[in-house]
Image (cartoon, rainbow, N blue to C red; front, side, top):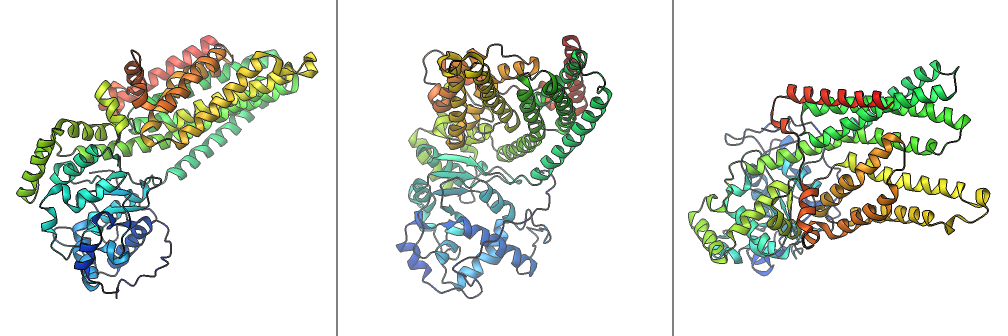
Length: 586
């Protein structure tokens, strides 16, 4: 069983311009439609799914869809709902029978819609859960989806269309689609069913992009807002307390005191954020996240007071960078909660996909034994059984399965959670990279410009190095936003593991040591890796496999499966080490 479902709002209702009357639908010849319209056009739109969810909710409220012995669902539950079998029997079958026995898709769109997205599931999930996952994971650019419960005619016998699996409506629609969306459920792995494994076989052989559908993160915005509010309160309180106590000695001793306070809070805050990157989502990570929020708020308060002191007396350059670093740290500490929820959700969906799946497609079951024999015979003749098993394992391990990830997995092994990336640390590293380069460029313009030297600043090579670094950061961000989900995890890992150490060290010690190497060596390397992706990088002679393996290797805490008490103790020890180092450095 998964975590308790949070009662959330249904997707916003968008009025259907057709104003379709489901009580008295227009009658059409369903048998003729399904013989004249190609199966790859038996599709629905995203809007159709939204309207379908509202219709099911209405019928449940009116008692037209009622619990049964096989499906004793809770009528007041707006998160899971009745299972697909119940909805098909009590809603889809009666409505489409009135419409002339066409499928739900052709009832709404008699001319059909070209298939972009193929949705695979096994009918055991709740209908609200199913629709929410599909809507939340709908790929960018996809317009029409093939979903068997809505696309196939539920009142007609299509057994003769399944005689040859490769010529079945499922296979023809999947061959036409660009994406395949896998919808897990809490009952069993869809890959314990033979038709779902056959769809994985077709998707692999046709080089389709396969995603795992996930539900929306309910309450994430409220939690982040609450944590930001805590940081603001802590920052104001700490700033007032320390600022009031030091108002009588604005001198070098005061600056030294604030430097010590900043290092005492900044290092442990960074350490707590980093620990959440390494730890598996659990209650312990919530404790670590709260500590990071409190420390980052204190750091922001101390930073504001010190910036005021420096601004009033010395006009040092790090007045500007101090504010940016503190802001990035506070935002990262709050956004780490989103990463925790995201990681918990992805782990749950991966667990649901593995449930009852043995790792071999030959162990999949079917309600019709002849279908199973035909499908296994076709896959055996193709000689791709091992490749299909690998494609499914890539999907379970990485959260998606694409030709790029499959090529990388065949060379360097499975890439754990390659489809996911850490929002908090990635955003903090990028903001620190871009802002520090931009502010250093502004400082260079001020100290090396006409007012200071009488010469234009662009005659110095350092000026162009900083301009080049800013442009690289912007290009990386644009590429990251536009690239596919299968390569975002690789690009994020590259910036975190290559640029992150330099940025964090300079953040802690307030220096620019090694920044020229960052601008001219590491930044171009990260940009090239972002464009190449794991599939392109693995083809680089000698170093390609090593780079991909190092960047995509999951460095997780060995205590993740132990008791949460052990994890908390381990976190406290690390925090104490950080604190001791800070005191020593200060």
